[in-house]
Amino acid sequence: MRITRLVEALDELVPEILDHTKAPGLSVAVGMGEEVAWAKGYGRADLATGRPMTSDTVGPTGSDCKTYTAAAAMQLVEHGLIGLDDPINDHLEGLRVVNPHGDRAITLRDLLTHRSGLGTNFGNSDLVPPPPLGEHLRQVFRRARSDAYGGSIVPFWGTRVGVNYQYSNVGIALVGYLVEQLNPDRVSFSEYVRRHIFEPLAMTSTCFPPAQDPDHVPADLLARRSVGYATLPGFHFPLPQIHIGDYPAGTALSTPSDHARFVLAMLNGGRLASGSILAPATAAAMLAPQAPAGPDPNRAIGYVWSVFHHGTKEGYVGHGGEHMWGWNHFARGWPHHRVSVVVSTNQWDLGDLGTSERPSHFAGRLVGGVVTAWVNGLDPLPRRSSTSARSWVAGALVADRLTNRLGISTPPSPEQVARIAEQTVVAPGTPWDPQVFQEAIHQVYVGPDSLRKNVQITREEVPDHQRDLVQRQLGVPGLGSQLPPLD
Image (tube, rainbow, N blue to C red; front, side, top):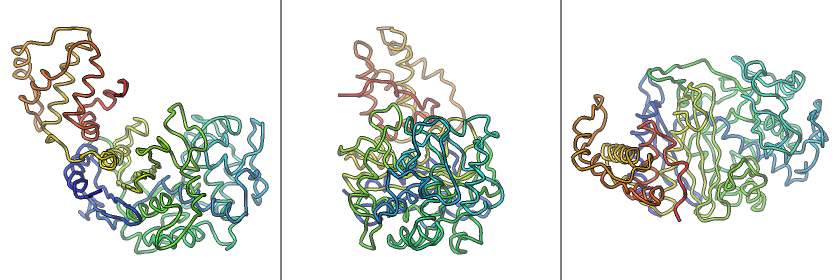
């Protein structure tokens, strides 16, 4: 696989993605085999000083570091210090965790597949660093309520053990506490993952502190950290540092290159040339389906990792993360191809649009879509310019609304199409090619099986990874999401 075309595509599309999402900066790394093949930063790490985002810029991983915590726990399993199906209360010191909905005890497997029954929470955060992990967790389970809005939104305990997938930061904090309690080095959680995850994989720009402050983070890493921005349209707010009490679930700092090495190690049976962190069978199990993760039959949960289309050439694993209120992290790996991509963005959009549609979240997803096209053997370079692509999709949308959507079997006449283009009012600065717009209207098929046929036409004109961006630019991100798949 030649990476040249991918680099050209990213150089063309990433600035457009940043402009659309209004993210200050973005850093990306692509790994192949056992090495990081390419890494680059775009935009700004600090808007006040103009400091550029580079491949060496450090950023919070948010929940992406749950994969480190899970790997550390699986090392304990390999050493026989805990079993996946052991009740966790057999190993917790000074803490007893009981799901009040009953049925059975919580196991390590339940925690690693988010099926303990604990409800979703925001990490039990504060504006001051948290107490030691054990003390923090004792306080959390003594209160027994979720953090958001004082527990009025989500219950602390949602279901019985093993019934449903419910993403829980507290659950992964418990995994981190087990690592801290049981590791043979008798060191803190942070020190254990440094010795047994980061050092073997030569992740020299990564740390997993209980708090992101000078008392816990090397000065060099803090100096290279990007400034995080909370955003609303027209605003970039540099908010105070948020400290996460459930810190094994979300406080690591890293670069995309370092994290890409970790993903490659998982794809390579738990090892790189620099060292090993897991046995091949253990790494494979972490990336294999262990439980359902929702209604989509193509998605499952491994041990923390999300697993998609497992066992196929196109199959991939991934995770993501956000750190309140200023950063987003995205990671994806393809086991068949042994390719990884990691994206770090210094933005968290404050709008309540849902995780997958917040600008700060889909910036990474859009970059991931470009890499996915390349991994799957498609040319990632856009076939049309930004102006042409946007005008074509707009024309296709207009044509569909004038015909197939309403069941009208007669397409608009050339004169009507020309009149639409002539009378269209275009906002200043909006990319617009009236000729391409008209061509798209004429290309849209009107007749039987129009949904399927027009999906094919659209993909030929504007590939999926470019259309995903264009549709968001046009304000229709869900366009086509309910259409039938192509044969």
